[in-house]
Image (tube, rainbow, N blue to C red; front, side):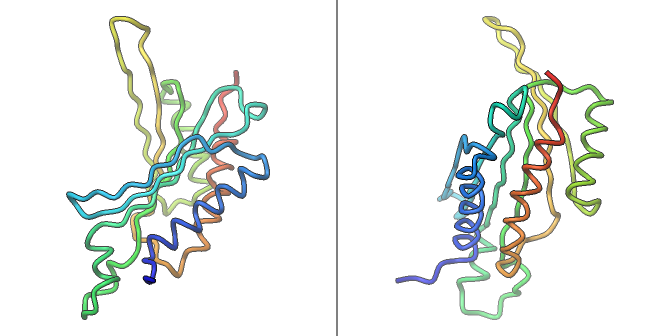
Length: 177
């Protein structure tokens, strides 16, 4: 038997919080990625969700991703005097729209996200257009909420709050159909 890392414990809490909300019928889990990158010896876990169809006129998805680098994992696993400031995971939250947002609407959504997540968070938006000869251009906008610091195992309960804030973000950012 092994002692699970902070990453493993945080992954279990995050996954449980998301699937609890899926079970209640608030959201639908649409994707999960649990990746071990052997070239960088890092771990990442991303779970993506959307509101139930009856709640949203277009498909807006949200995701939470936790990531632990080799430095994060080794500072926890190695019995040395390594600085504990590297022990933990980075957490990023994403809200994705299947449309390109104009500057006014993007600014309004950034303000809404700041109200939900707090003004200490780093909130960015990226819009893109994918062009193909065989189909119409595909537009998208992705908002990213970052914390600018590691989330430690002692702050694990915050992951449950993040799931709630993500659901609130998706609800607040619905685009009229």
